[in-house]
Amino acid sequence: MTVRRVLKMGEPLLGQVAAPVERFDAELQGLVQDMDDTMRALNGAGIAAPQIGVSLRVVIFEVADNPRYPHVSPVPYTVLVNPELTPLGTEQAEGWEGCLSVPGLRGLVPRYTRLRYRGYDLRGAPIERTVEGFHARVVQHEVDHLDGILYPQRIEDMRNFGFEDALGARMTPMPD
Ligand code: NI
Image 1: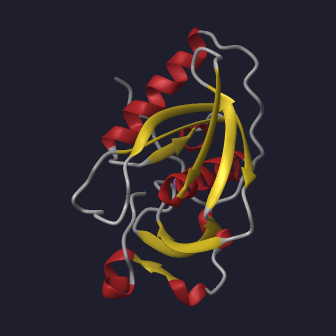
Image 2: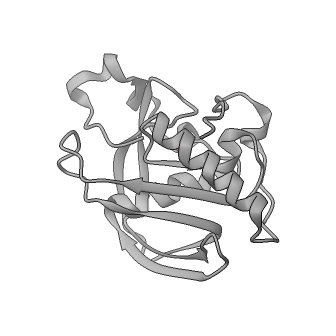
Image 3: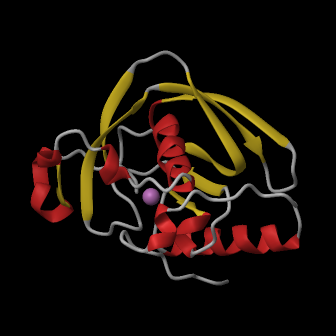
């Protein structure tokens, strides 16, 4: 069990484009274990390897059924290596996102409503899914981390960005 330090917005590694994984080996398993321990310790819905200081194209995410977020459908636990996203259609929806690297803040971010993603699991087996709603949102948020993008860069109206405890009823919270 290793809970790693989560990098915060402003640290240069979070702005880098991460490198593809080339070997599905014990080192990758150790990385994912640390990501998993860190995500769970902080009650995150997802985490990307660069957030713990490793510039590789690996994300994990999971949203359990949670009474705090009655409008969010559960998302199965997924380890996604070298992901590729393909939006299905042009429809987007706005949602209030948070991020473990941007603690205490929330912003209203547009994301594609439906998309297909491809990638590999921890053992190198291919994954391909067509998803929508919060599942689509969390994948777009996490994969952005691999391209050096944090959600505040996606906010269209900066009036819709602020501290969670100050936004209050203006905001519908979603899992980080
Ligand atoms: Ni994030």
